[in-house]
Image (cartoon, rainbow, N blue to C red; front, side, top):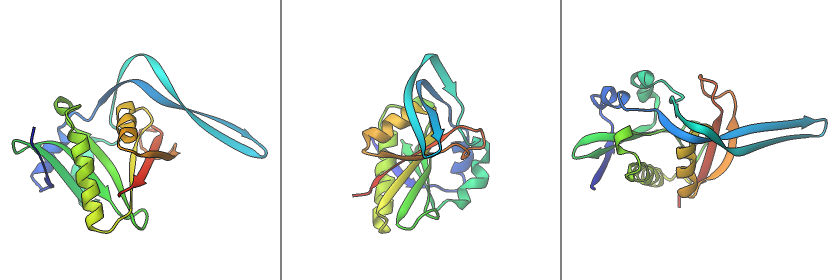
Length: 178
């Protein structure tokens, strides 16, 4: 399959917002915390769920039209000229680091290497602009994204339990671009 990655154009946004942003998972990263006078310990445990869950995306796809102009770049993956995935990139959070806010592949195209192709394009975009690190953010419930991050060589680097408006815990994974 030939995947073409290109910059987003305005007419793409409405189409991308209609993608199936939900993810199915039978596993999550569950957080537990222990606090005493001299120590705070936070642990994430991989927890298998009793049945597969369909999880909503932590950002409403309906807001993509308002958000896309605030990103440093949005890359679109196309197969036969039709968009099948996208990645949004911000560079405002930290010097020398690119931040991937969204990495979405339409439901029918998942597990076909589209997300990996998008990651490679994001990596190339960052290297061309002399960035040295890349950060991925995802919900602690998005086990497929966690697995992808680990497969691509990312390491867990933190979390924020008040990051997403839907109250999902945000996990952060990062790696060097080279």
